[in-house]
Image (tube, rainbow, N blue to C red; front, side, top):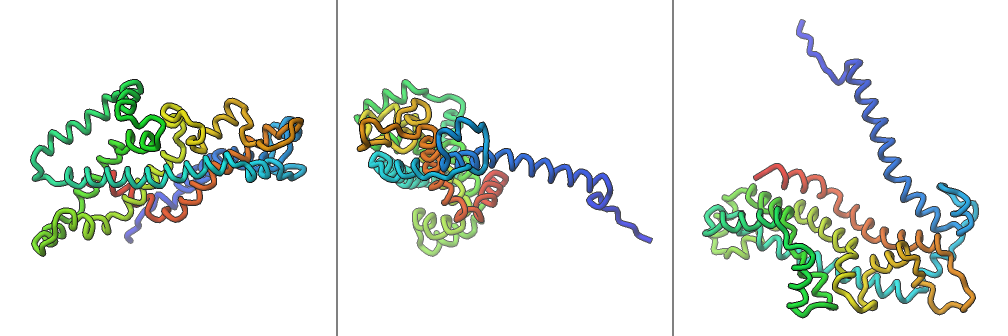
Length: 294
């Protein structure tokens, strides 16, 4: 009799799987609970937030904080700046990264090893904040949106992974397109990019999240408050306790500082979270393929 043992059905395997499920469930709850608290506190009063260290459901729901947020011209302006920087920043980053990664994936490229060494060198040694600021100043793009878009146009790690992914694609397809008369740009546009949807969606999301969450770059290069993105306004409210959203209110009006902070955080987080479900099917596949192959 041929008996095939299966460790997954053994007592030790069942106990191990159960432990993993419990651990991952608890870890997931710990990760989600802070956001649930922020969401609940955004609907609560300042008195309740001060009286209750943690809660999931407020005793009394109030929309005063969201009313201030929705009526604030400052928030709409900063939200528009964040959307603009995220959309165009992601487009610029993906264009620069893809057009640099594709030539590097060609093993017959003249000077390829030198360029790869230069790219890898930047992973180990960076210019730093002061040289970067001097470069931006010398380019005369201080206080312009170009300062938020150009300096971080290529992430070296993303570049290397995308290069490895392009390198793993069947070279016969590219050779066939060249025989049919396609140029390198036509091959990239018509053959490589359609086959690279997972990796493009994954790193497009990475770039978008990085642009959306970035506030330090705007603090460095933006002197005009009218050009501040949402994250800088959020920092002013959360870190510096400046209620910049409570404008056009009576002089004796005291805004709900704590719930206003929570409501602004929710408004800042929700838009980028809404993008993830549309890219989820590409996300894991894109990271795994790009990191393993090549």
